[in-house]
Length: 153
Image 1 (tube, rainbow, N blue to C red):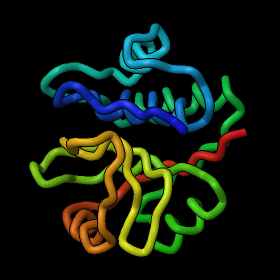
Image 2 (image 1 turned 135 degrees about the vertical axis):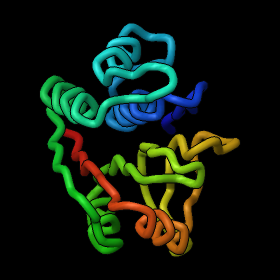
Image 3 (image 1 turned 180 degrees about the horizontal axis):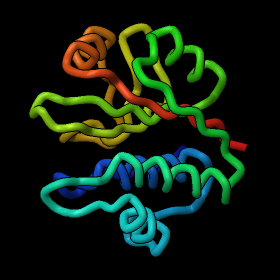
């Protein structure tokens, strides 16, 4: 069983999502590791702002190259697309505007009839939390959702 980590501040969701993606893919990575520090620097992560979209994508593509992952970017994925990718055994990095008006990125690793399983959901008490299908539609109503589909080797 993968032991995912939670973000420990208000601005590092992208690096934590990528760290948890590494863990999901079987790449050893810890919150206090040099690999995580590299991910955080590479994403351009800093207090008060978070990470830069272009740098997140560049960081993800570098990780994919190193570890043999396949990455595809999508804007406004349908619920059917999300389910299909998860059914194939892929992970999804999902970015949307959350309740506080800020963008947040979470790793989606599965789903059930009630919703998606999200790792590092915005200020969740646990590392993994179910987000309901109805709430996914609320996210869509705020701004276009962005996602990266990731297939591990």
